[in-house]
Length: 298
Image (cartoon, rainbow, N blue to C red; front, side, top):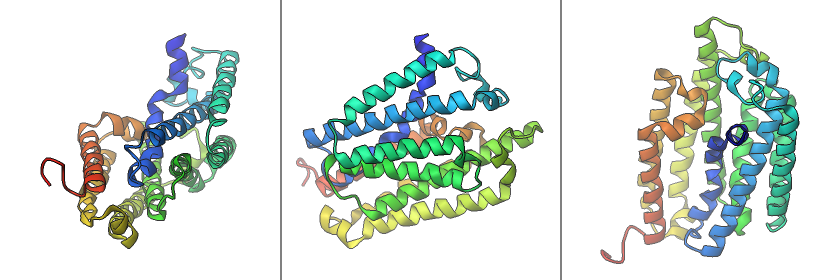
């Protein structure tokens, strides 16, 4: 039962909430203990809220999920857990989430509530509207980034928000493409109407645009006057190579693997992407906090 309940919460999806820490790293507050604690609180709040949304979504999508080759194994669709028990777990999550947010910045509370309501609207209606379904996913990432900034009381760069929008659109269109290709290959009709409105060639064009937008917006951020002034270095531009590789590697997976139907699985199971992401984060910390120098080798 515990394992089933954890599966219902989809803890693997919590990796999406790491964007909450973007403001912490790029505001030079990463090594401030109090700020790290507030950022962790925001991360937990978004994780609890996301899990609550997943439960609601699974309850109302149970019938459609049973027609999906992978989603039919979800706890509610497979009847491994009853709707009554799922609702009890949902109530517990919302209670804990509310208690946690009571100690946080008022604007963060507003953003988390907005994130929750937006995802409810997505579950009930917006996910059936072509293009808007992916843009809602992107908006969720931007709310997380802004939430991380308000949690620690700093101003987030508009370039970071823009880059978050492009990368989330990129992942969203990749997910739609993988879903559509899987149904085409299996010669079955997609259970969701919105998938019938997409075409593979159109999604490939969207991936090209959003992938390019991700790289360009990040590169412009690294050379922006305010960025170089705050960080005291213009060497951050060299970390663009890691962003380029990440986008190219993901495009490769899109065309060579089925795992991108769930972007989270691809991001946490593909070794090259994991290694690239780790090196990118370490490089950013090194350049932002040590200006390309270390105490031992000034």
